[in-house]
Image (cartoon, rainbow, N blue to C red):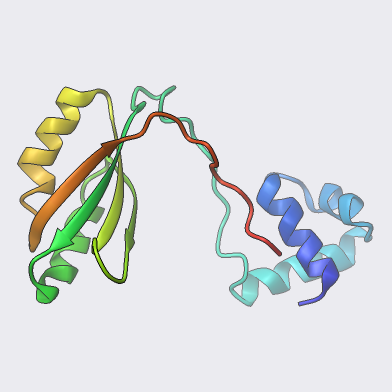
Length: 148
């Protein structure tokens, strides 16, 4: 990966809907070589997909909670992760080294909806020993591009 590939990545992380022509203009290449480099970055697994960033508040899911989850059994990890994937309100989850075992971001309509989700589904997932909930007040840094 060279400086031009890094420019491509930086521009696309900030604005992923550019056409190849617009991208080429921004990085100072003609369209054909820019397109070739873009396809190589995709084939090589550097670019794994394109997404729309959605405001959960506009969709009525503006109440966000970060859950710190501690597991009681290592053998429950697969079941816990499969269970998380079945809950649409779980918008992001990461497995960690150390305590806690997971950070999970949940978006719901309000606190009452979150409380039902927590009690009826999240706390009943396999291997959950403890969950600590923290309400998100404001996103300070969100969707920042990775350094290239």
